[in-house]
Length: 150
Image (tube, rainbow, N blue to C red; front, side, top):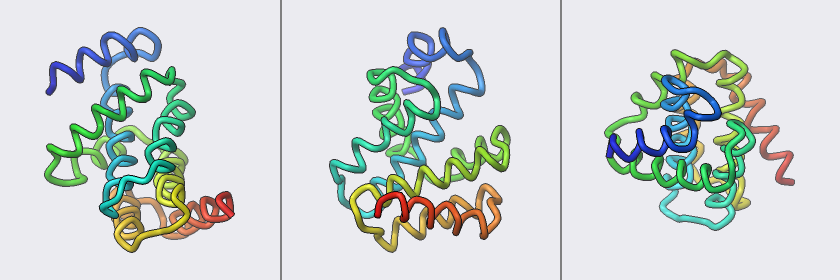
């Protein structure tokens, strides 16, 4: 598993955006987005399509790179025992604005299918708390994502 992750980042990401912590941050971000998608027990096409789109926007990835990163994130989520391995990286490397953007992206994935499941909301709240995002920013991100989807 670790070998596949290193190979992916060595072949695609490291050449354009630098290696090291950035690779882990991309994977942690993608994993948290995948967690939101999977938490309600259904894989909606709108949510599945939204994640690579958000990763392309956030990290400037090519479509194929974003798809491969999502696949790696799915594997990482399947092997993860808690959110800590992802949120710890966010806390180490993200500014308050980056954390807000992450939570906003989590809400965008949750709203992609047009409905918020109680488990999705709970997971996003838990992530926001683990990354120390102020509650007012959490609410603002939720409202902004809700308003954007109509």
